[in-house]
Length: 185
Image (tube, rainbow, N blue to C red; front, side, top):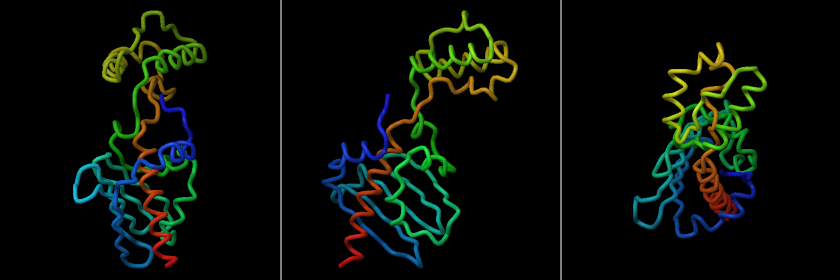
């Protein structure tokens, strides 16, 4: 279970990309392409493409698309974003497995809380060993527990933020510090 905030995570993992090179290509106005790459290898790389206020992240650590709806932003402003919840609220496209992980104990806890709040019985609900187990059981049974199971988040019990968004933002911060130093020269 990832219980860190973004600032603590970046501080704790500040050496994560020490042996990586930053490749920066400025495009028109505030747009750019940045690649964080380990030497000449294409292994473990992350590419950040920033065009018209939309940040696309792609590479060996998954993919995501973020939209801040502000074409005048400069990518350097993104190093000021410290709230992973806020950052992920701007995420418009992603692979669910890159962003969320499944915690069986959290699923059990959240299920009990929902049952208490919405007054339904969870006596016959099994302990979910995996996301797949939860999903298949919920598909077959959730509406029997509560009529509006989707609205109350019953289908998402046990989902928590995975580590990849933290890795993306750590890598982006490494790149932005490099770009800032370049622009100061």
